[in-house]
Image (cartoon, rainbow, N blue to C red; front, side):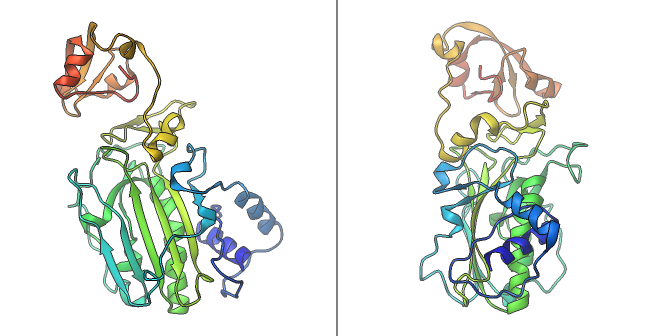
Length: 333
């Protein structure tokens, strides 16, 4: 049964590798099984999926869109596992960011009307840019925490975050499709929870934790606990602001050097010249008046600043920070 679930999700993701581990004893889900050479290929792919014990242990992004948490077992309580359909969304925090969203998904929660526009909602960190290397053109999507196909929640600001095209389509969608098809085929219910992971005051989530468990069959049909990376290959993201730029071939994503801290919130302890002199030495900086960031003049990010927002500054790092400016995450002035 475990292999059937794995292979079904692979099919739904158009041969994108995911793994599923049942919460309880084996049973027939009715999902079709791939065979022969295709099955063997997918088995090799699923072995590459990493697994960690807790969200705090999530490693750097290394080319796969997600990792499993706690042996792929969700952390629901007995009270959570109800067959009474409901939806719960957290209030936005003081920065306007979303919190955990949870629902008991069933046929009764699914949409019966056509989806309307969500363009009126602007989630935090929405600094969208267009790139030829991104499928669909634009880097960011307005990502539903709980997918529209599951609860019909559309232009709900408490259910929409700034997410990359990669996270939305390659990471989250296969799991959403799994839940939707299971509910349609069985008319059972699935407890479903998505938690965006924001570090300190970042406006863009580093990723999302997705958990689900089918209720009537005690997890035989659907059961997963995964962390999806909010990254885009070949694009670097400043999670504090949402600003982004095309990376070099060897700089796939900012999280290559900070992913561990982006999940745990641990500070970067790298020492530089600014920390060595305490930030009291006068030197030249470039300020982005729009984002409130300051850069070294030679920083590649300076080229991306619009002229109307660019300001040259000579003074101390200490004074800039005292005036409310923040150092660039790329050049670390």
